[in-house]
Structure formats: C-alpha cells, structure tokens
Image 1 (cartoon, chains in turn yellow, red):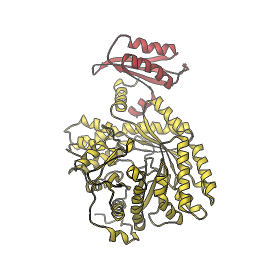
Image 2 (tube, rainbow over the protein chains, first blue to last red):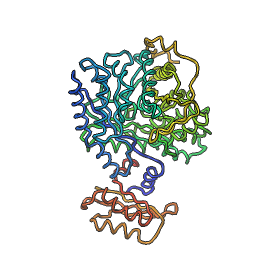
Image 3 (cartoon, helix red, strand yellow):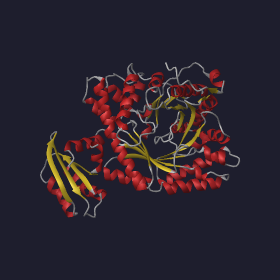
Image 4 (tube, each protein chain N blue to C red):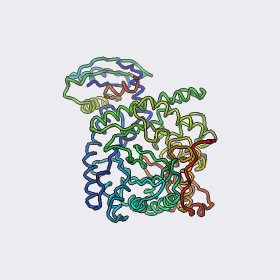
Length: 455
Length: 89
C-alpha cells in the first residue's frame, strides 16, 4: 500500500494548499467549417462544437469526484476564427460577430466556462479576414459572455507588425469603452501576444493552432499554494535547496495533471495533447505566485530581487514538470496576472509592484503583462506602446509574451476595480504620462532580430 | 477498481465501526487498513476494492458524507491511481 504520509500529503495539497487542475481544455479544429455562406458556417461551427464537446463537462466532473482533485474550469479552444472569416463571401464585422455569438451559444450549450480562439495571427501581415476580425473584437467581446480573443502581433522569426500593434491599442481601448458598465471587462478576455503558442489551454489566450489536429485534450495544472508551503520548510536554506524543492513539488503537481489529461483523453476518445505546467494563481489567499517570491525572502513582491526570484521559480517549475509528463507544452512556467493574485494585488496597492517591474519580470516568466488595470484615460497610443515593449521582449528573447491590460473607463490611479471570481481585484496602476503617439503612428514592421552575436 | 478512503479527525468511539459498516453493507472489500495518530489527529487510511460493489466512487462518497458531518470528520474517497501517479515514478 502507498505510504500513509504520501496519502496525507496529497490530501493536504488539495484541501489546504489549493492544489487543483486549473483547466481541461478541448481543442477543436474549425477548419472543416469554413465556407462562403455565413449561416452555413455558423450552423457547422455550432454542430461541431456541441458534438465533440458534449461530454467534456460531465467527464471533467467525473474525474473530479473519482480522483478527488478539483478541476476548476472546463474550456474549449478553436482554430483562429480569422480563418473562417477569410473564407466568407464578403467578410464584414457583422458576420464575424455572428460567429462569435455562435461560439458563445455553443459554449453555453455544452456548459464550459470559456471558449477561446476568436483570434488572428498577424505577426507579419494581415489578410482581409484578419482585418475584419480584429475590427470586430470589441463588439464580439461586448456582446458575448464566454468568448475569449487573442491576436499575435509579433514573433522572433517575423519581427513585430507595428500596424497591428497600433490597431490593438485602439481595439483594447474600444473594448473597454464598450463595456464601461462592467469597468472594461471585455479587455479581460483579450490578449495581445508575441510568439503565441498553438496548444495553450489557458484563457484568454487559448486557440487551436495551425499545426494541431482535429480534436485534442490539453490540461493546465496549477498550485502556487503547494509550492509556497513546500518552501516554508526550507527557510534560510541556499538557492540550490530552494530550486530543488520547487522542482520536486512541480513534479508531483504535474503528475496529477498528466493523470487527468490521460484519463480525460481516454474517456472522451480524443488524443492527449499536452500538459501545461503553469503556476496559475487565483485571488484566494494561499494561491499566490507573489507569496512564493516573498517566501524566498523578499519583503514585498516587486522589490529588488523579484526578477531573480521569479527566474529561479520559472525555471525550476519547468525542470520539475518536464519529467513528470510525456508531453509538456503551452505556456509552462509561472504566471503573474496582477488582479488574480492576492500577493500581487497587495504589492500593487502598496506601490511595491509597478508596471516597470512587471515588465522586467516578464523577461523571465512564462507570460507577460497580465490583468493589469490602468487608468481609463490612457491613450490608445500608450497602450500600443506597452504592447510594443512587451512584444519586443518576447521577440528578442524567443519567448511568449502577452499583454492583457484593462483601461477601466472612468477609473484613475488609486482606484480599485472588482472583476470577481477568478479574475479578482485590480488596483489601477499608473502608466507614464509622456506620449508615444509619434512612435506608434509610424506603422510598418520592426524587422526580426539577429539570432547570433547575442549579448 | 481500487480506491483509497482517508478519514481524518478528532479521535472518538465508533469511527472505524461506522465507516467499515458502510463498506460492508455495500459489498466493498477492505484490502488494507492503517490507523495512526498524526499531528494529534486520528488518521485512518483504507485501501478498498470497489470491484464487487454496485457503488461507484461518487455514491460511496455521498454515503460516507453522512458520517463525515455526523462525527465531524474529514473523509475522502479517491481512486488509487492519483497517489501512484503522484508519488511513484
């Protein structure tokens, strides 16, 4: 029989340390639904999603009870919808929004928490359909509940599409204004990527990439609380011990993700894709990435040393997780969404954590500037410039970076915005008041960086 | 299918009797049992075989939930694989 201490350890991780499977995400290809007639396309999309994902929520629930491990979200990711818009006869914003509404309806029918993939990949240039889709994003997000959207504006191999960066600044702004009554909530469902990954199970950036198959199961694990508790046992020890402790913990967490992914894939009769071994925080106290960094010896997340601590954490999570799963993918690492992390919320409120520091942190963690509320009067050009900075970090360092900022209408520095649920509470963080307008208005493309002479 | 039943709580009379009673009534065989006091808490771990029983993990959990509330305990029923996968390579 398994050692009783190990059994109790597992149960404590779940009961007291907030260990959970954050999401089981079914990727569904919509390539077969493309066509010139919008009504036919919407019909096909609805049918395909509701057929393939009809048991997803039930199977997720069954696994949850049988193994006693909470699965917080069940989600769907689809082929970037721009592909469908491109194939339409005379694509219009109206038609694109109809597809978004179809996705929303299908997601509600099968009972999932989110559906992602209202997306376009425009890191080098736009097609007609992609232009239309991006233009439709504010409406699509404002008029649906569960649809998430993402746009890839840069990559290490292609450079940064600065026209898209400009447009995305305006899009974020418009999305916020369209949902002013919910403090710009639409922006929480919109991510701007550089080097987007094709198999990410996490929202809002999940979509099923070009190279993916017909249908696939990806799983995202979580568990910052478990890592923090493990580190409490090695107070004062040198960093070698810290890294080793994180690795061992990440291994255990990922094994659980692997088990759920395999079980889900078997029961649904859908191939297993990847386990994304990310430390994804929630606003619950004890489920925070910031607290892990503080446990390493920082008085407050955001102070000097935070970047180094995060670099160690991110790397150790990957090293521990890689051996635990046959296929690791997605974003894999540590997430730093400000409004979703109790420790970050507190650090931002006290002024210890600033956007500049977060930007530095994104150089060494798995994502980017995430769930940051900025003043409502921030200009579109400034948002574009924030996106450009992040994309540059991703492009040069060959990693995924993303921007999910919420210019909350009517809010100013010092205010606090409540989103509720997993999305948490966002203190409004100040941005620079100097203009980037002329820079952003240039447009064109920033060339891809050199891959040698790296210094 | 094998499952692990974990019972943790303040020690009192009748915990083993009531839990094993439910298992017996539902034709569930206890394959292994260990009981200890861990951090001042009564901790019992049972490995049970659900093969012959009509009951699935879900229903067993529901039945044990009554004892859980009644006796102020924390009871978990989980398939064995979760522990295997987490602690064994």
